[in-house]
Amino acid sequence: MDNNTATKPRSKLKGDAWRAYDALPPEVRAALRESLVDWCPLRAQEWHVHLLRKEKLKPAKAARALVRTIRRMDHAEVAAFARAWPKGARAYPHVAAEASIQRYAGAEGLPAA
Image 1 (tube, rainbow, N blue to C red):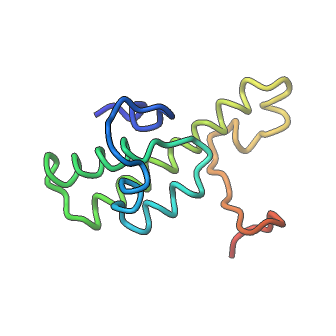
Image 2: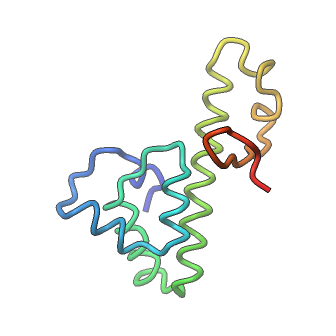
């Protein structure tokens, strides 16, 4: 399954997005809440089921794979933004150099411990 299909905001899939979101493992839901990319819960659930049934991954491994992909997409989005923005590579040298972005917690934007 192509990684980009999971991140399309509007899905042609039928179903309740809230139920799909609730059916995902807690760590995947947390990654979706933190993500910069607008993930479709129906696509994320479809991909999770694909990892479990077709790829025959165990539930913990499937959840880890999905979380890794969500975070990798976030890194790619921030890197693309830094390259496209005027003075992007100079303003965001760590991102332009493909370094990982830091996770921030709370409304104050303090770095997570």
